[in-house]
Image 1: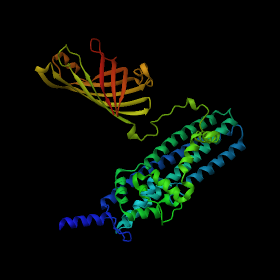
Image 2: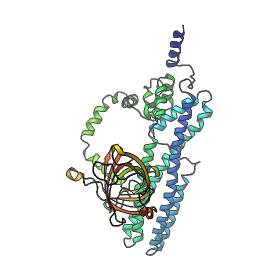
Image 3: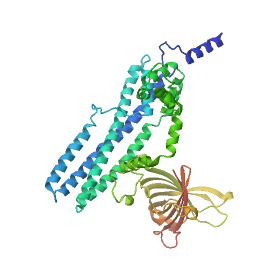
Image 4: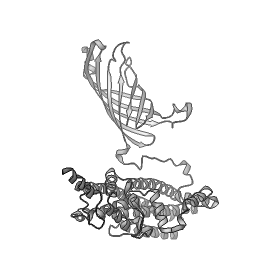
Length: 479
């Protein structure tokens, strides 16, 4: 009897009646609602960080243009006055778009946000869901607005950069305008990268969202809800009756190829039967028309870039958040002793570095000094002291190919260290108990292995007194 009741409950959960109003809390527990709202809050924090950077960038570039206008006054006061006034009005119009009460235009189709909006709207129809998830729905709308703001800022900056370059060509004798145009173009380049990273994060679904959407995919009521409320269905002008299966819209925040083909057939009818073959045929030989379009797109993407773009070297670290520019590592250094014996001393160190750019890393570290005795039959662990480190690595060459691959990723390394020795063997060594300063300079070789980087170092201690060991070798890993 209990087995029959169990199977009956399973059938009622998997195959609910079409006309019956469904309690979505049966499908997804309340903690899932909270976690989905938490995921949206994390996206909001990323959007808020982007918004702060946008406002900071706008204020910075407004000063750049004001400086260019003052330079223009040296040769044409009337043109400078008009330029400064137009610049002030343009930036004021742009800043109005950051008003939280102002919403401009129709948001573009964003797969993940469309799936999330349908999911949250469906869950909010359950008892008690409206109060808990109404704030999440507003947050999703806010993310769409942030997407529009990002595109608006991108278009605005590209237009202003193009105008500054035209002004530079018109007045080549003014170095201030030339410098302003180059700086503006550089900031625009990094903003585009930062905006693209934000978009990728926004379109990256969390594992919890995927699991929740897959679970709801089994519910016919949710499939019907997608047909009636998804943004994709509205873009194709779909009708409720006879609409194709929209369940695939929920998986991973993306639509499958079969779903899009079904939507095209629903929209275009018999004309869409050989649509795939026609597109494939046209894609094989795009002709000069496609080439012209590609060239135009390339020119638009590079709008505002200076003529000496080849001399511009990108710093990929600049658009990364602070924590992603940190590198963690450890290394081991051993002291010399006679053959078949343990090293006289060992330094096990951990380090924390910060990537200033792609070729320069600076950081600090701390080392623990210990010994293990003389041999396997005379093991004796002793604590010898500690050390404080600071270091600087500068990349000398990029990795090559073939035989020159080994010479790539060579770094010039240097640093200052303070070492404290707490163990001594004679009274004469008491004077060395104080902190000892070491100055190191040498070369490092970094070898990438999966997510780790092996690091080999050969360093010369140029501050060691005569008679002491002045060359050290270290090996370790960075993460």
